[in-house]
Length: 584
Ligand code: SF4
Image 1 (cartoon, helix red, strand yellow):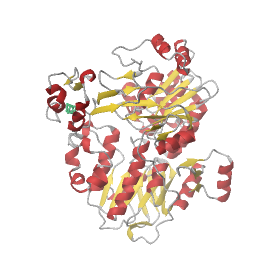
Image 2 (cartoon, protein in one colour):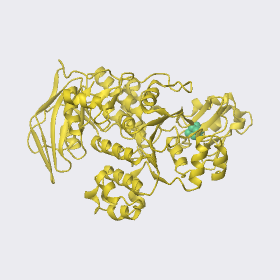
Image 3 (cartoon, rainbow, N blue to C red):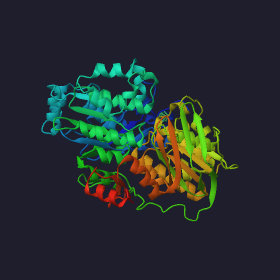
Image 4 (cartoon, rainbow, N blue to C red):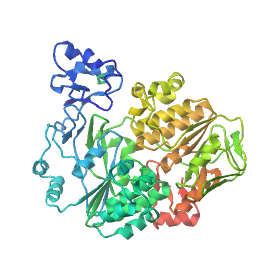
């Protein structure tokens, strides 16, 4: 069985470990060989050819979890692409099919972005060597496979590629000027009006790109990709910053890009949206930070269920030691739980925006999910509940201690994770530190963390505070599909175990379905008016919310996960006629 040694450069922190701990302690180094050395980038580097089984000691030694020694499946000797001498390796690729939307599903750090960057010709594979391969070498490498034809067509310019990057928040750093001017310049497909209408960005065409919100940036980036005269659109995480209504509209837009002569390849972590917009999915598995393998293509439903089960039957691979399970049905409501806090009718004006909330209350030991469009005041209401801002009229129950995790997390701080999570480490090792995978982050500073790492730290910090109600704004942001499901479970278990209450605002319907006992719904006109109602029972709340979206949901009989019904399908019409928009 081939074995690889990998050092995750992002995690390697030679100062934090007290000065190249692995190099000093490596048993092979101590025998006089050069197994772990200081690499040209100042981080540790492993010389795989001299590493032995004794190197597994170093895996345990590194306090940041940066070293991996991994046994590979026998057939995987030569990577398609390798970062540096001892970095992450990718062993295969997904491939576009004309007329279809192809999804790529997997955990963070498993190589999804690398795979689509190779398809998009942004990264040229190196077959594990130091130099990039030429396009001709790539064509030869894939001889006898579908990929061979794909790269031949790329070389002959018969496949024209448009790529939307993951980090749309970086766009204002590379582009300047009015949104409309920027998009008109790109419009080689001649479909400016259509794309602008479908993505609903007409109102911001005169705005400077540096002043628009994350959700607007995402839609502008999608428009820029669609306006290029391309027949392969590659989209990295198109739902980030979008609310649910925008996610549904974005999915329909993405589907419309895959006509008979063109295809879409998409990476996405919102499982309901991934399920809704794709025809075929490749599951990616391996070990995060070490290596990634792309599965054979599978019909979307089968692929998502296989991903959740942790088993790929065709490949005969088990890539997780447990199945991910979902609640089979919606909870019936508050039941006989004791009321914890309430509010009277509330109003709040902020510039041109007015928020009004019906009288409501929340109970001890419950989780209230919050759903609504962007700009309808969800964060404002949460801040009023948290006492961060006062209402203009109305009252919030007093004497209740609140802990608040904000939507936007600051990455500037030089504080160490250990200092921020001191209380969590002392009191909630089992409930928070371990399940959120925070141990290897403790010696880092907040400013060094990725978006997903920062999100997990912020959640643990919020939950470790002494509070009765935890207000958790967008816990799914920057997490992969699996982490979102784990997060929902951690929040639920924490409230159950410690008799606390949580209010969770999120745009990932699956997370809200899994975490909530009841629902609050925000309606109104984005940026002008927000109306808060509820908490309702899950069934009533989902009915009210899905009616606004004009979609219906059913549970998959195998995995119990919610799926969006095809518009005007038999199920969609049946559920609408019965007024039961979520079969749960
Ligand atoms: Fe230190 Fe770990 Fe980097 Fe080695 S791999 S230098 S132990 S942080």
